[in-house]
Amino acid sequence: MRILELFIFASGLLLTAIAAAPLYDFAADVNEGAFQLDYYERGGALVVRLEYSGSVELSGARLIIIADGQSYQGGPEDLGPGGYIEVELPPGAAESVEDIVFEARIAGLYRLRLDIGVETAGG
Image 1 (tube, rainbow, N blue to C red):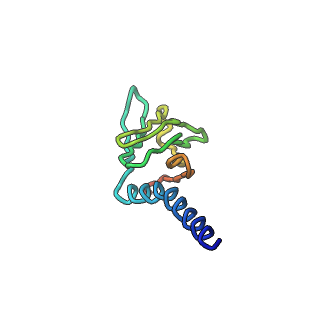
Image 2 (image 1 turned 90 degrees about the vertical axis):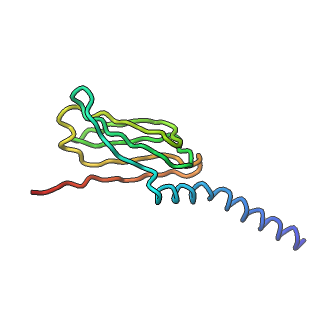
């Protein structure tokens, strides 16, 4: 009976380690700069682009930008290496961005929410 208990305990530890592996891989990707936030103009509007170069698949990824009390969203998209999400802001909204949030699921198991925030320069 003791051997069965040890086997069940060891199996539980192994399953926990397997389930946590994508989370550790994702953390390593982030430390290596897996996200790149950039922007460009398209037809008078500002397009904010979040590129992902990590190795862990992200499902249901959304990029949400709050500006002028309005919410602008890109996604949901499944992201893999080289994937990206874009959000188009109407003219004038770029000057009043309040917050930037990224949401996704890591390997379908863990819900991720990154509050990227906005840093303003005072003068």
